[in-house]
Image (cartoon, rainbow, N blue to C red):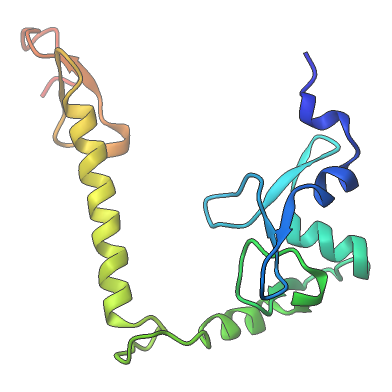
Length: 165
């Protein structure tokens, strides 16, 4: 069964996939990747919306260069907010984003924001660990990383357990 969303041409799906906010950003409303960039399918391949927009309105992206969001909004696909730069320049600009806090580290992240990110990672890890541990009739092997832990029955004798010591 063909996907009902792919029956329209990519340009139409792109034009219907964003809204314009007060700052002039074309904010993508569709799916995103784990880093927060908009994406959609074109001819069976996943493409980033900002790259599609730049190619559509301004021309091809030269090899070895990348797209920089001048507005610092990863969901923005307005070609006027996009610029072709080198990877090094893009990374340099990333650290120029002002932070509401005043304590800075050398990497460009402020200490309160870094602590918050660390707490969020820890919270997610603990939630995942708890959900795996709550599986009925199962226990987790302690010597394996949390995302690849083996599940074994609680009542299995030592000779029947997976990963004997």
